[in-house]
Image (cartoon, rainbow, N blue to C red):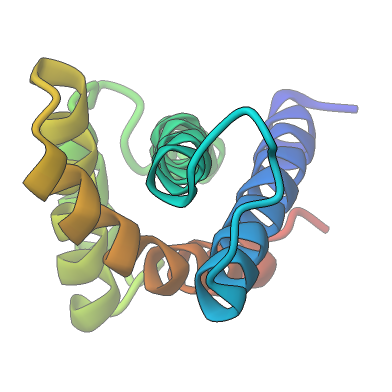
Length: 147
């Protein structure tokens, strides 16, 4: 198995964990009740939400690194290191569309906000975006699956 296939396996597994977290948070909010007798609803919600955000963080990191490895395998960007430059290059060479690239750049920006400081309002806004970001990553990764 080459490095691209290994990275594909890692991002695929990570996305499964993110999918599970988004599903759990969605169901939890829809049902509107706490299941843990040691936590109230808000505390349990924040715990589940923060877990989803943590999974989102590592998925984004694996996601752009997979795109980088794909570009390298195609010999299109071996010298590029920054995630934003990788994504811009993916658009210019036709791996992603302009709309996809813009969304990925927004996703990277949101991911970076989580690692610098924790603000409840930012966490809540991000929690609303993550299911869409998950779908976006899943679509692109499926399309870029190594053959």
